[in-house]
Amino acid sequence: MMEVSPTLPAWVAIVTSILVLLGAALTLIGTIGLVRLNNFYSRVHPPTLGTTLGIGCVLLASMLYFSVVKQRLVVHEVLIAIFVTITTPVTLMLLVSAALRRDWAIGDPSVPVPPGLPEEAERPEPLPESDQPTS
Amino acid sequence: MSVLTRRVLPYPLLSAFLLIMWLLLNQSLSAGHLILGSIIGVAGGLAISSLQIPSGQVRNLHLLVQFAFIVLYDIIRSNIAVTRIVLTPGRVAKSGFLYVKLDIRNEYALAILACVVTSTPGTVWVNFDSAKGELLLHVLDLVDEDEWTDLIKNRYERLLKEIFE
Image (cartoon, each protein chain N blue to C red):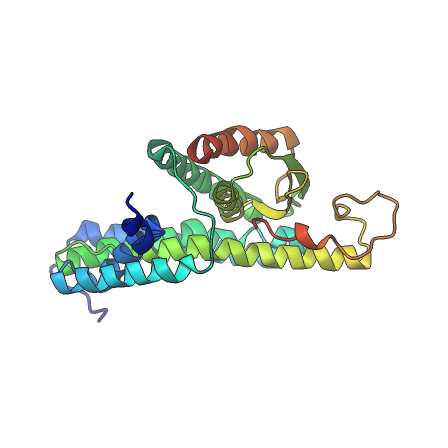
Protein backbone atom coordinates (compact mmCIF):
# COMPACT_ATOMS: atom_id res chain seq x y z
CA MET A 1 0.00 0.00 0.00
CA MET A 2 2.85 2.36 0.78
CA GLU A 3 5.03 1.44 -2.21
CA VAL A 4 6.85 4.42 -3.69
CA SER A 5 5.59 5.23 -7.12
CA PRO A 6 8.36 5.49 -9.74
CA THR A 7 6.47 8.38 -11.34
CA LEU A 8 6.42 10.47 -8.20
CA PRO A 9 7.76 13.94 -9.07
CA ALA A 10 10.72 15.08 -7.01
CA TRP A 11 8.98 18.18 -5.64
CA VAL A 12 6.12 16.06 -4.28
CA ALA A 13 8.57 13.73 -2.56
CA ILE A 14 10.45 16.69 -1.06
CA VAL A 15 7.38 18.59 0.12
CA THR A 16 5.81 15.42 1.53
CA SER A 17 9.00 14.54 3.43
CA ILE A 18 9.33 18.05 4.83
CA LEU A 19 5.70 18.06 6.00
CA VAL A 20 5.94 14.60 7.58
CA LEU A 21 9.20 15.48 9.33
CA LEU A 22 7.80 18.81 10.53
CA GLY A 23 4.69 17.12 11.90
CA ALA A 24 6.74 14.43 13.62
CA ALA A 25 9.13 17.04 15.03
CA LEU A 26 6.28 19.11 16.47
CA THR A 27 4.76 16.03 18.08
CA LEU A 28 8.17 15.11 19.53
CA ILE A 29 8.63 18.64 20.89
CA GLY A 30 5.19 18.33 22.44
CA THR A 31 6.13 15.14 24.24
CA ILE A 32 9.47 16.61 25.35
CA GLY A 33 7.51 19.51 26.79
CA LEU A 34 5.22 17.08 28.58
CA VAL A 35 8.28 15.63 30.36
CA ARG A 36 10.15 18.90 30.87
CA LEU A 37 7.54 21.23 32.32
CA ASN A 38 7.07 21.23 36.04
CA ASN A 39 3.40 21.07 36.94
CA PHE A 40 0.27 19.39 35.72
CA TYR A 41 -1.44 22.47 34.31
CA SER A 42 1.63 23.48 32.32
CA ARG A 43 2.06 19.97 31.05
CA VAL A 44 -1.34 20.03 29.40
CA HIS A 45 -0.14 22.63 26.89
CA PRO A 46 2.75 21.08 24.90
CA PRO A 47 0.95 17.92 23.64
CA THR A 48 -1.47 20.21 21.78
CA LEU A 49 1.41 20.91 19.40
CA GLY A 50 0.97 17.39 18.10
CA THR A 51 -2.80 17.60 17.88
CA THR A 52 -2.87 20.89 15.97
CA LEU A 53 -0.03 21.74 13.65
CA GLY A 54 1.66 18.36 14.10
CA ILE A 55 -1.27 16.36 12.82
CA GLY A 56 -2.05 19.13 10.33
CA CYS A 57 1.34 18.73 8.64
CA VAL A 58 1.07 14.94 8.50
CA LEU A 59 -2.44 15.12 7.03
CA LEU A 60 -1.36 17.70 4.44
CA ALA A 61 1.51 15.41 3.46
CA SER A 62 -0.90 12.49 3.16
CA MET A 63 -3.34 14.49 1.02
CA LEU A 64 -0.58 15.68 -1.29
CA TYR A 65 1.10 12.29 -1.63
CA PHE A 66 -2.02 10.25 -2.29
CA SER A 67 -3.58 12.90 -4.54
CA VAL A 68 -0.50 12.70 -6.77
CA VAL A 69 -0.07 8.92 -6.59
CA LYS A 70 -3.73 8.13 -7.22
CA GLN A 71 -4.08 11.00 -9.69
CA ARG A 72 -7.28 12.29 -8.13
CA LEU A 73 -8.14 14.56 -5.25
CA VAL A 74 -7.80 12.71 -1.93
CA VAL A 75 -9.19 14.88 0.85
CA HIS A 76 -10.83 12.53 3.33
CA GLU A 77 -7.98 13.35 5.75
CA VAL A 78 -9.99 16.49 6.46
CA LEU A 79 -12.30 14.29 8.55
CA ILE A 80 -9.40 13.29 10.80
CA ALA A 81 -8.56 16.95 11.28
CA ILE A 82 -12.17 17.79 12.15
CA PHE A 83 -12.57 14.95 14.64
CA VAL A 84 -9.21 15.54 16.32
CA THR A 85 -10.00 19.25 16.61
CA ILE A 86 -13.37 18.54 18.20
CA THR A 87 -12.37 15.70 20.52
CA THR A 88 -8.94 16.59 21.96
CA PRO A 89 -10.11 19.81 23.64
CA VAL A 90 -12.83 17.82 25.41
CA THR A 91 -10.26 15.36 26.79
CA LEU A 92 -7.94 18.15 27.87
CA MET A 93 -10.73 20.12 29.55
CA LEU A 94 -11.85 17.01 31.44
CA LEU A 95 -8.28 16.32 32.58
CA VAL A 96 -7.75 19.88 33.74
CA SER A 97 -11.14 19.99 35.47
CA ALA A 98 -10.33 16.75 37.28
CA ALA A 99 -6.95 18.10 38.37
CA LEU A 100 -8.50 21.34 39.57
CA ARG A 101 -11.11 19.46 41.59
CA ARG A 102 -8.37 17.34 43.13
CA ASP A 103 -6.37 20.44 44.07
CA TRP A 104 -9.46 22.11 45.51
CA ALA A 105 -10.13 19.02 47.58
CA ILE A 106 -6.62 18.94 49.07
CA GLY A 107 -6.59 22.73 49.42
CA ASP A 108 -3.61 23.42 47.17
CA PRO A 109 -2.87 27.15 47.52
CA SER A 110 -1.42 27.46 44.01
CA VAL A 111 -4.80 27.09 42.29
CA PRO A 112 -7.56 29.69 42.34
CA VAL A 113 -10.33 29.18 44.88
CA PRO A 114 -13.64 27.75 43.68
CA PRO A 115 -15.93 30.45 42.31
CA GLY A 116 -18.17 32.08 44.85
CA LEU A 117 -16.13 31.11 47.89
CA PRO A 118 -14.20 33.51 50.09
CA GLU A 119 -10.42 33.14 50.01
CA GLU A 120 -9.97 32.10 53.63
CA ALA A 121 -12.90 29.69 53.84
CA GLU A 122 -12.55 25.98 54.20
CA ARG A 123 -12.92 24.56 50.75
CA PRO A 124 -15.92 22.27 50.57
CA GLU A 125 -17.07 20.32 47.56
CA PRO A 126 -16.92 22.49 44.45
CA LEU A 127 -20.14 23.87 43.04
CA PRO A 128 -21.66 21.07 40.99
CA GLU A 129 -23.05 23.08 38.09
CA SER A 130 -19.91 25.04 37.33
CA ASP A 131 -17.84 22.14 36.11
CA GLN A 132 -19.02 22.05 32.52
CA PRO A 133 -17.46 24.48 30.07
CA THR A 134 -20.69 24.45 28.13
CA SER A 135 -24.02 23.24 29.28
CA MET B 1 -39.11 25.92 6.16
CA SER B 2 -42.25 23.88 5.92
CA VAL B 3 -43.42 21.74 8.80
CA LEU B 4 -42.56 18.59 6.90
CA THR B 5 -38.99 19.69 6.19
CA ARG B 6 -38.56 20.62 9.82
CA ARG B 7 -39.84 17.24 10.90
CA VAL B 8 -37.55 15.31 8.54
CA LEU B 9 -34.54 17.59 8.92
CA PRO B 10 -34.56 19.00 12.46
CA TYR B 11 -30.84 19.74 12.21
CA PRO B 12 -30.10 20.48 8.55
CA LEU B 13 -26.44 21.39 9.18
CA LEU B 14 -25.80 18.15 11.03
CA SER B 15 -27.51 16.13 8.32
CA ALA B 16 -25.48 17.89 5.64
CA PHE B 17 -22.30 17.22 7.60
CA LEU B 18 -23.16 13.52 7.93
CA LEU B 19 -23.77 13.30 4.19
CA ILE B 20 -20.45 15.01 3.43
CA MET B 21 -18.71 12.76 5.96
CA TRP B 22 -20.17 9.67 4.31
CA LEU B 23 -19.10 10.79 0.84
CA LEU B 24 -15.59 11.65 2.07
CA LEU B 25 -15.22 8.34 3.88
CA ASN B 26 -16.21 6.42 0.78
CA GLN B 27 -14.41 8.83 -1.53
CA SER B 28 -17.23 8.58 -3.99
CA LEU B 29 -19.93 10.75 -5.51
CA SER B 30 -21.92 7.88 -7.01
CA ALA B 31 -25.71 7.87 -6.86
CA GLY B 32 -25.69 4.89 -4.50
CA HIS B 33 -23.50 6.64 -1.93
CA LEU B 34 -25.45 9.89 -2.32
CA ILE B 35 -28.67 8.06 -1.45
CA LEU B 36 -27.11 6.05 1.38
CA GLY B 37 -25.41 9.17 2.74
CA SER B 38 -28.67 11.11 2.63
CA ILE B 39 -30.45 8.36 4.55
CA ILE B 40 -27.68 8.41 7.17
CA GLY B 41 -27.87 12.20 7.33
CA VAL B 42 -31.61 12.23 7.92
CA ALA B 43 -31.46 9.32 10.39
CA GLY B 44 -28.63 11.00 12.30
CA GLY B 45 -30.56 14.26 12.51
CA LEU B 46 -33.65 12.45 13.78
CA ALA B 47 -31.64 10.47 16.33
CA ILE B 48 -30.02 13.62 17.67
CA SER B 49 -33.37 15.42 17.82
CA SER B 50 -34.46 13.07 20.61
CA LEU B 51 -31.72 14.68 22.74
CA GLN B 52 -33.43 18.06 22.25
CA ILE B 53 -30.29 20.05 21.73
CA PRO B 54 -30.97 23.77 21.37
CA SER B 55 -30.66 24.56 17.70
CA GLY B 56 -28.20 27.30 17.03
CA GLN B 57 -28.01 29.51 14.03
CA VAL B 58 -25.00 30.92 12.26
CA ARG B 59 -25.96 34.48 11.43
CA ASN B 60 -22.90 35.42 9.48
CA LEU B 61 -21.19 32.72 7.45
CA HIS B 62 -18.62 35.11 6.02
CA LEU B 63 -17.45 36.03 9.52
CA LEU B 64 -17.30 32.35 10.47
CA VAL B 65 -14.85 31.73 7.63
CA GLN B 66 -12.85 34.76 8.68
CA PHE B 67 -12.84 33.43 12.25
CA ALA B 68 -11.54 30.07 11.04
CA PHE B 69 -8.59 31.74 9.33
CA ILE B 70 -7.83 33.88 12.38
CA VAL B 71 -7.80 30.72 14.52
CA LEU B 72 -5.56 28.91 12.02
CA TYR B 73 -3.11 31.81 12.08
CA ASP B 74 -3.16 31.91 15.89
CA ILE B 75 -2.61 28.15 16.13
CA ILE B 76 0.48 28.39 13.93
CA ARG B 77 1.74 31.38 15.92
CA SER B 78 1.23 29.73 19.30
CA ASN B 79 2.77 26.47 18.05
CA ILE B 80 5.94 28.46 17.42
CA ALA B 81 5.67 30.19 20.79
CA VAL B 82 5.22 26.94 22.74
CA THR B 83 7.99 25.24 20.75
CA ARG B 84 10.28 28.06 21.80
CA ILE B 85 9.32 27.68 25.46
CA VAL B 86 9.89 23.92 25.41
CA LEU B 87 13.18 24.04 23.54
CA THR B 88 14.83 26.95 25.37
CA PRO B 89 17.15 25.27 27.86
CA GLY B 90 16.61 26.20 31.47
CA ARG B 91 13.58 28.30 30.73
CA VAL B 92 10.79 28.02 33.27
CA ALA B 93 7.55 29.27 31.78
CA LYS B 94 5.71 31.70 34.01
CA SER B 95 2.40 29.91 33.75
CA GLY B 96 -0.69 30.78 35.68
CA PHE B 97 -4.44 31.06 35.90
CA LEU B 98 -6.40 33.92 34.46
CA TYR B 99 -10.01 35.02 34.89
CA VAL B 100 -11.79 36.52 31.90
CA LYS B 101 -15.29 37.92 32.11
CA LEU B 102 -17.31 36.83 29.09
CA ASP B 103 -20.41 38.43 27.63
CA ILE B 104 -21.46 35.65 25.29
CA ARG B 105 -24.01 33.11 26.53
CA ASN B 106 -24.84 31.23 23.33
CA GLU B 107 -23.96 27.56 23.86
CA TYR B 108 -22.51 27.14 20.42
CA ALA B 109 -20.38 30.24 20.66
CA LEU B 110 -19.08 29.07 24.06
CA ALA B 111 -18.42 25.57 22.76
CA ILE B 112 -16.46 26.92 19.81
CA LEU B 113 -14.54 29.28 22.07
CA ALA B 114 -13.73 26.37 24.40
CA CYS B 115 -12.41 24.27 21.51
CA VAL B 116 -10.41 27.15 20.08
CA VAL B 117 -8.89 28.16 23.39
CA THR B 118 -8.01 24.60 24.35
CA SER B 119 -6.68 23.47 21.00
CA THR B 120 -4.49 26.52 20.70
CA PRO B 121 -1.22 25.53 22.37
CA GLY B 122 -0.49 27.71 25.36
CA THR B 123 -4.04 28.21 26.61
CA VAL B 124 -6.46 25.75 28.22
CA TRP B 125 -10.07 26.36 29.12
CA VAL B 126 -10.39 25.29 32.76
CA ASN B 127 -13.76 26.31 34.07
CA PHE B 128 -16.72 28.45 33.11
CA ASP B 129 -19.04 29.85 35.71
CA SER B 130 -22.18 30.39 33.67
CA ALA B 131 -23.93 32.27 36.49
CA LYS B 132 -21.25 34.94 36.72
CA GLY B 133 -19.96 34.59 33.19
CA GLU B 134 -16.45 34.08 34.45
CA LEU B 135 -14.07 31.98 32.44
CA LEU B 136 -11.04 30.46 34.13
CA LEU B 137 -8.11 29.87 31.82
CA HIS B 138 -4.69 28.42 32.31
CA VAL B 139 -2.01 30.14 30.28
CA LEU B 140 1.46 28.69 29.78
CA ASP B 141 3.23 31.96 29.15
CA LEU B 142 1.42 34.40 31.40
CA VAL B 143 3.71 37.40 31.16
CA ASP B 144 1.13 40.02 30.28
CA GLU B 145 -2.38 39.24 31.55
CA ASP B 146 -3.96 42.08 29.60
CA GLU B 147 -2.62 40.73 26.36
CA TRP B 148 -4.39 37.38 26.91
CA THR B 149 -7.60 39.01 28.07
CA ASP B 150 -7.49 41.18 24.98
CA LEU B 151 -6.98 38.11 22.79
CA ILE B 152 -10.04 36.35 24.21
CA LYS B 153 -12.27 39.39 24.43
CA ASN B 154 -11.48 41.33 21.30
CA ARG B 155 -10.11 38.77 18.91
CA TYR B 156 -12.44 35.80 19.59
CA GLU B 157 -15.44 36.84 21.63
CA ARG B 158 -16.35 39.89 19.57
CA LEU B 159 -16.42 37.84 16.36
CA LEU B 160 -18.31 34.92 17.94
CA LYS B 161 -20.88 37.35 19.28
CA GLU B 162 -21.46 38.69 15.80
CA ILE B 163 -21.62 35.20 14.33
CA PHE B 164 -24.08 33.66 16.78
CA GLU B 165 -25.97 36.39 18.60
